[in-house]
Image (cartoon, rainbow, N blue to C red):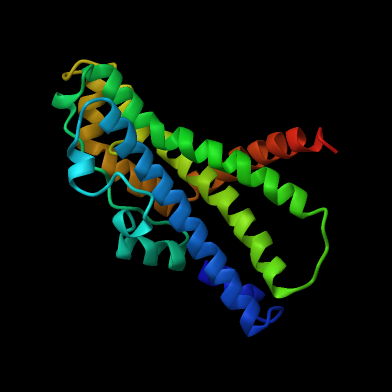
Length: 221
């Protein structure tokens, strides 16, 4: 994020830079809050009142955003929210509850990415040059890209991500993959983050999803 701003600083005014940062900040808040709220909502519907009692059954970003995670998002383009705590023992159906809670945040981010991709696509048909429209276009673009990034990253079957928890919900407690990931998953995730592995994977996947979504919205023109 910071490097991108440095690259654009010679081309943007101070107000445009502020609009750019604000658009990114709001998009991150929306993506993370929707993701965590989905976990809380589904867990509550499955019979666990822990998220509600902890004040997580809300779309209010202040209930979900981690200050350090947000700073990392703004500085390096990667961050995190406060995880929603659940008690699976309270679920009406243990495995179904674990599976749906795990996948709910990902599905929410995909839906939001789809909606914002459409709004961004149609905004490209307009060509005003005022500051508000500059902010709006970047806001829609960031909402699309951040939601897709959150969905793709959390799909990875690596502990402690949602993709891993989804797979774990169908496995026995002593499953070799589950045991291995719970032991080494954090190390594997760190390696992925500090090497170009995820960047390459992300660029190809996002490019494909962007083409697919834009192709769909183009059918309406």
